[in-house]
Image 1: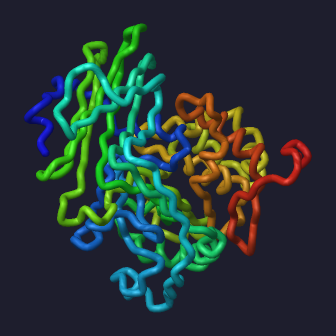
Image 2 (image 1 turned 45 degrees about the vertical axis):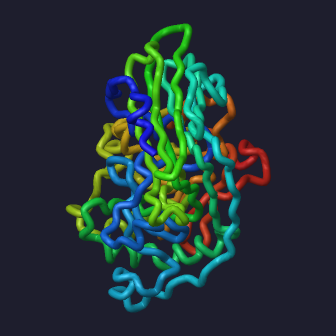
Length: 392
């Protein structure tokens, strides 16, 4: 079905960085880390057909795509074959849940309607979104989605502890290798049809955007249309070809571990290998000249400096797990491996948050909810069992 031939969208007015805005706004919806590019970049057709899978290890590229490197459950990966001492992990129990057709995830939208005024042909449906916010982001799932997660994360944490250094050592010449950048996927939300939209409008009466979708013998298709109140907008749609329609390959949201190495282990790598995450802000340079015990003490009060410390991060580069990783790195300078999970930063978001809080506020919430655990050199966060102020 080719809806573009029936209903033409209005001309597109690009937002400065629509993909970054989309990711930034939808993080507060607690569905995981949003991917603005749901497809997977990989050379093998088989991997492209299945998309991001639980157990994949990779990183988020500058443009928002997930770059696959290896899978912890597959013994035949090329990367594993070159690491003679590596032992893949046995398959683990999975949990799954479905979101029904017509589902959506949105930020800045005040109401939705299943249909709108214009008469539509048989087999074509529409979903209308109304927004009064200056910025808005929508991820529509006209055919629903499926969420798959690992039932138990503890075994993955142990496996990461044993192999993190091997992975970083093997990938030391990789262009985007930087400490804390590796991502081990523990949950995915996939669909075979999706439509995303970011918009900006400056009119108090609000604006409307409509997703029109339909299916017939030619296949499934969807297209965006919006009202004149939108000043700038950016849209994207995707449908899996019929040849692989029985496989959900388009990944909309990720859950996973971010892994990094402690300072001593990381400093064993050549300095030229440092990636884009090497912090060069004024506060970071100051901290680098202080003794570790003093830096650890200062990080107990992130409200003093966190916004300045993270000011160098462009919006498109920022992943909230970076906050927890930097916090753990400073608080536990003796760590060998540092592990954070997406469930940690998403759990401190409030229902009233219309966008991700600033770094100082996020770190303060994380600090109040979680304690630091050092388990044989592996440092991670665990929920507090007492009031946060009883530990100080």
